[in-house]
Length: 89
Image 1 (cartoon, rainbow, N blue to C red):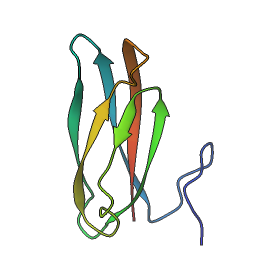
Image 2: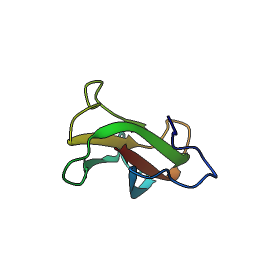
Image 3: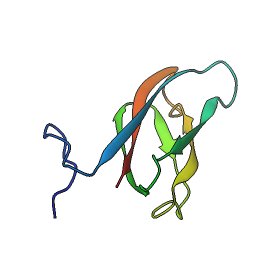
Image 4: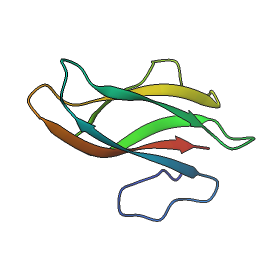
């Protein structure tokens, strides 16, 4: 079975959905809720991230069509950016 790998073409049958995050710490806690919904007939498999922003996903998303994840800035960084990708198949 082929899988999604960094730097390789996305295999047939997979869809990647990406959302960018830019978190500027100004309060004790900052972040955003991100909704991911796979196209009709596809379900969530996993998530991938690029950048230094943190993300938290519920444990029961695999096999579902949609879920909400949360982004946040790591505690030692004032300004964090990144992109989170949902892998649908």
